[in-house]
Image (cartoon, rainbow, N blue to C red):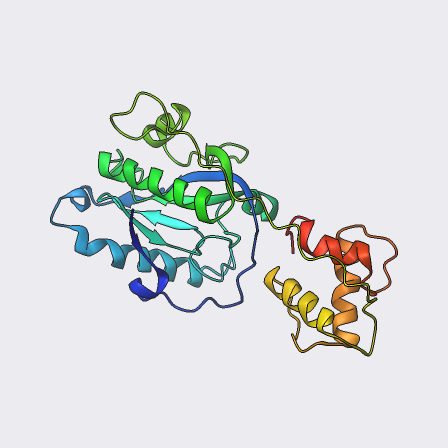
Length: 265
């Protein structure tokens, strides 16, 4: 896989912290949905692609209606097979049409549009497969490969690309889609330490739980002191996951849920 990271393409810092996700059901394929210059696919035109990704990101971050904090996509694939990191693996995207849809699938955008360059190149299809397999291998993505229009009212990813998705998203030259790598299952987490975390508790278990909650996307200090702010995070987490009682105390049930409950925050 030819991969360009956020740092390598000079991506700006997001306007707010990304929300971490552990696993998804798979990947949804998108297209730009606007005009893409037909000559962008030329073999000597790849130097334009990183700038195009950065322009997409700037446009998204300037969109006050959507309120995007960064580029909406997990990744963008250019006509030359290169995968550009968007929000990246284990990060909730903003492109699928709503919070639950964004948490359920990653979003990979192909650099084709509704005019100009409308047909994916063979190199691009290889890059899309590379992106999907990267997310399955390193991002906990499940086996589903769908179009943006699946489950959401849109024409995205356009007719040619959607036909490829419906055919099983095969690599060019193959007769069947490559088998999906088995995603790494989410960790079950450490055993409950036997200490109830409540206001004024100072313990290594508090630091471990705080770090886990930060990894899930919660704003929380990681200092080993379970004070009022940590208790409030625990209370909100219990309410979100329908854990009982909602008392802000981390016992065995709340502790386990920090590692096993789906990330929706």
